[in-house]
Image (cartoon, rainbow, N blue to C red; front, side):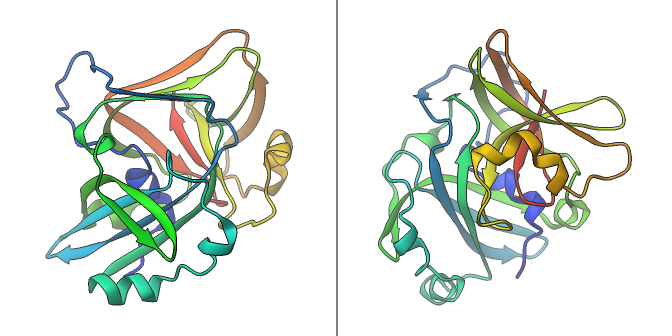
Amino acid sequence: MKLNSAYLLATSFLVLATNAFAQTPKYEVSVSHLRNERYCEVLYGNRDWLSLKIKVFSTEGLNECPENLWKGVTEKTITDRHSASFVKLNGPRYWTIDGIMASGADTINHKRENFGGVEMNLRAVIDINLWQLFRSGHYKATPVSRETKWIYQAGKEVYELVSPEGQTYVMQSYSQIVNPTLTMKDLPTLGAQLKLPKGWTYQTRFLKEDLNLEANGTAYVLQDNLENSYQRK
């Protein structure tokens, strides 16, 4: 079963089941020096009537997803091994944030699997409603339940999409899934590669002060047509 790529934000590294009515997250995990760090994810699971229960594994904190090993990881191998009805290889990706603060039991566990020699840690187990899945698409914001703070440091560049309504989405990671040659140096002029819907704009700016994007229960995320990922300010 194929999952719309724009919905992958709902299953990225720190998608955390949380209480939507929580007031102030108590962050349990803090990671820094992430900018341009490479990582990969494997998502697999099974359909249960009108939902998908998916396990999300990530190399973050373990390794940088060696290319020679990642090339050998296949959806078929994972499907056969786990009798999975859904498998997605999500990577390689590179962070455009400088740090992460997060809470939730899924971020601090030792449940690991080896995928073709690439070791990964379980980061989330989530249920995706098929109705939400069918409504997803590029440049369409999806609500994600999580408690995280994305940290962008002063003096660094940020890369943003602005919707026709004036909502700003800040890139959290860029992807080499669609364009394998995409690198950080391409991001300032990435707009030339994007198929922006009418009224959307892409911009780059330098931060004069730190920017912290905090999701206290719900984040609104989207992907562009190259599967780069963004979160709404």
